Amino acid sequence: MNIGQLHLGAGHQAGPLTLFPVWAEGTATTGITTGAAANLEVSELASGPQVSRLTVTNRDTRTVLLLEGELLEGGHQHRVCARDTILAPNETRDVETYCVEKGRWSGATRHSRSARRAPLSVRTELHRPNRGADTQSRIWDRVDRYQGLNTRSATGSLLEHLDAGSRRTEREQTPLPAPIDGQRGFAIGYGGQALMLELFGSHELFLAHYRPAVEAAWLDLQLLTGKLPAVATRAQSARDLAVRLMRVDLPRDSHDFQGTSGPVAFRGITTRNSGPEAMLAHLSGWDVRHPLMAG
View (tube, rainbow, N blue to C red):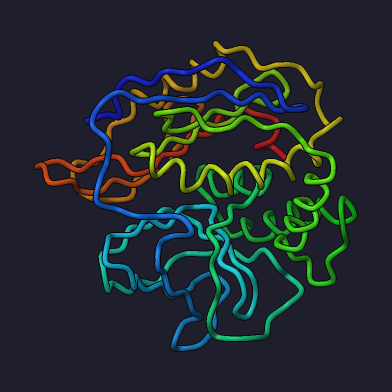
């Protein structure tokens, strides 16, 4: 089973980034909720706080999708969710996380959650093949690059940088494209080369996360301007990335998965509709040759 045919629209240039809308053929995934509307409870572990784990409980009446790259705010320190997770109603599970606020280790047990996403520069580390013991320090290094861009955070908080970046963007009115009817995802190129493609199982799932992804991209725009030539990424580069992902074999059962397809590293998760096979809920593919992946 694979994700089926993908279609890319015309690219939209926003500073150094080129954004392509993505549509997918086939039946949409149903029966799950996600984003800020999902009723998820997040807390430190009952056995004691750990940087690399948080406990999540689905208090919703529907199955909930928690995305890789979502920010889990508060607690002993802000974290980023490391992989896609699907939780049935009333299900509790410990999820893998990384710290995005290295200067704090104190505070409440409970976390708040507004379904914000980490920017591309940070999320690259979540998609590096064979993540290792140095991943946490690499993420801290990525977050440190935002220091002084819009503000300086005493605790190295990615959330403070996102807040300050959003306020600056509102003043400068950075233009980014609105979602298009039926759209299920987007591809992003930088420096003339496609970097990543993110796909959701339905238009509704996409809409729940598009705004947070756009707001995080504002911070990428500010960080990346001037780092590589602000040239448009050719549509063919984005199509090549899409073709790699169309060849990915999806698990037939509800399951998270990962792997490589040539130079593309991918992660995602499937869930069940009412049919015999699982359906794609979310997938991200990243070109590991891209300069941004190398840092």
